[in-house]
Length: 124
Image (cartoon, rainbow, N blue to C red; front, side, top):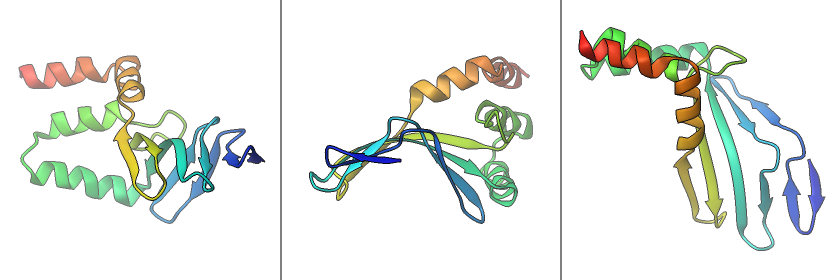
């Protein structure tokens, strides 16, 4: 990380490990507290227990098991093999706009063959 032009800039991908999940900030992300601004690209990676609870929640909500497994496969982190979510946080730090990073999610789903698996599970 570096400080430049009132910004705390992520110069290399950064990882922050928590007990049940991991937060990764992408290179080029930044915060500027002086101007109450941010532009963060973040990946949240679930730990084993959290991933298990999320899968159980999908099944309890009525999602068929094969479809739940296809959804999880679509959002697996390549490095850890764990369920993960890409988000973007922008705008004011005091009122952040946090949204899914759909471009990254779609790219991962296509590359991993998960869309094909999801379509097959729907068709059965």
